Length: 544
Image 1 (cartoon, rainbow, N blue to C red):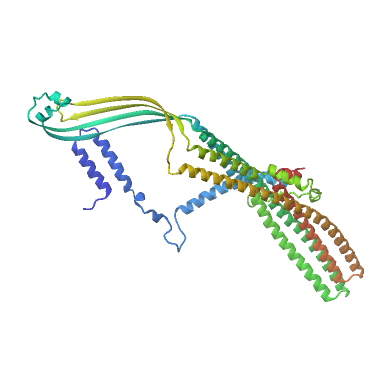
Image 2 (cartoon, helix red, strand yellow; image 1 turned 45 degrees about the vertical axis):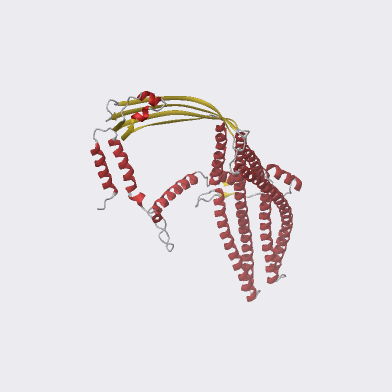
């Protein structure tokens, strides 16, 4: 007959209880057996784990947990959005430093890097714990049932002839044959409690190396935290530059569209009086339509650029802030320092380089730790324990109960020296040496890249500032040419084609100036990030 596990449990409990209802251990034992057998009978534990995976590769996985998790994500997001939206003032103008402050206080990347640095700092405490003794307490209490059947047949006369203590006890007076039948059972209980001490006293610098490695790893984590802030600042600056470029393009497109409409209006007036041909009027309409399309496209780019800026600065969706404009003329006045100075500043201040140097130092400490592993250690070991034993015996005649108490106290000075471990220590040292050299090469690579980044950013900044000066001159010249052509067109001395050419040159100069402004901001941001302190090199210019 097939029985499930709960039925088996009931049967076992009944059989155990029937053995001896007076035995004090039977009921606890039956409960333990029941728990041990009932738990695996739960349907969730007996379920095949593969059933929890997607049933087929042909269809997406579906579960009741998916909408629950979705509602939880939505709830948290709505709460965060509500708090973030109400902490912003839509009536004020936010400058670039304000946007950077928003990002650094709201972005999850800085909080994650902060928690990582805090977790790494905890490793210093773990390393320091090796200097303290290790104390552990252990205690147990329980009991059980035992049954013994012993039968002995012996020739006592032969045993009495032995020249030892047994022979002396028998004294040669024992009968030839004797037998012993012993059938005993006992309930027993035992209690044990102990305290163990282990204190590492000397290890040839292994603990010191572990502590040094933890300190250097914490330093690297803190510097990586700073690098996260710099990267976040640059992300905001980059988004701000693109937003400003889109806004300048909108301005240029507005001026271009207005000029095109002005030409169309003037051409239409002349056409009404028979002073302009149909091709000239149609060409003017075409230019005006192209200008309106360019303005619409520029406005679309501006809206997308604001979304990117809002993401970088952690501005909630739907919240429109007034974004301040930079003073490009002041920022493009010229670079204050020569190239060598920016390179030196990068090598002195870049947190990523400092973090990699700290990693090299941590790898050096780990190498010392690996070398100390093959050296002897001196430890102090101590223990204090108590054991109590209670045994109730049945079936042995006069012997009814056996009780025992044992107390133990001891202390030992232990020297341990690994003589042979199959080459484990040697290979650990080789691995640590290679890891350290790899960290040194990564530092050299990062240093070379930092120098190249500064050099590239410096050249881009110099070129963008020079290009902006030329763009200013080109804009002024094209504006004067367009104004002159428009006036001449009104007087009839300039043709419609020449006026449209002058207007096209003016529109191109507007876009060129817009691109030059964006290039100056982008180049200065790259140079500031490369030099290791974007706050000092760029953001402070906006705070003035």
